[in-house]
Image (cartoon, rainbow, N blue to C red; front, side, top):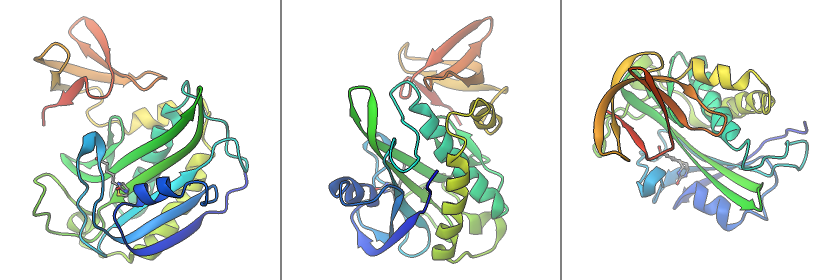
Length: 246
Ligand code: BTN
């Protein structure tokens, strides 16, 4: 796999994902668009992503499947992108002394606090992923989160500050290694080993049935649905159909 990652730093952008999407045809495969400051960081479900300027990592990876040795990705194996992205973050964090877990589908948690979020935006033609923008925010040095009640950072956990540009170089090395696991049979097991709450009896909201229940996460299907056991019954859930009660 040809895998040269080119990092492009900006002092300020509205959102690295928005910038990557606006100029997707100008960016080479495996370009990384990084911002010291994001004025309009975007999260999942239309939420905002707050990050203090210069303290954390906010960046987006441009991936063009089927080009330069990157495998073809279709709507059938698209969940592997979530697996690769979240495992890259947990491996990177582990190298910084933080053993984090993956709150399905791709939030990264340390204990009950969020340390990183991932927003993947795909351009799909037919059932082929033509390009993908993998936006990642990782809290490194920020120690106060006025807008958020459940955020944490590497510094809050380890006490150490990290230089953000060096940290992104290191993350990219980890990402390249993890990307080579694409399509590998063991990828889903490696992902599930890191799954937040897996095998523990916990409370969840079932948004489809408008109820709460106690259940155990036992895994994730190949299409990315969460498998939860509730007593003798197993159900699978899509994103937005289930919520964790923490
Ligand atoms: C979430 O947890 O809701 C996803 C957060 C994703 C945030 C990152 S920061 C870099 C990239 N640019 C954005 O606007 N969002 C993503």
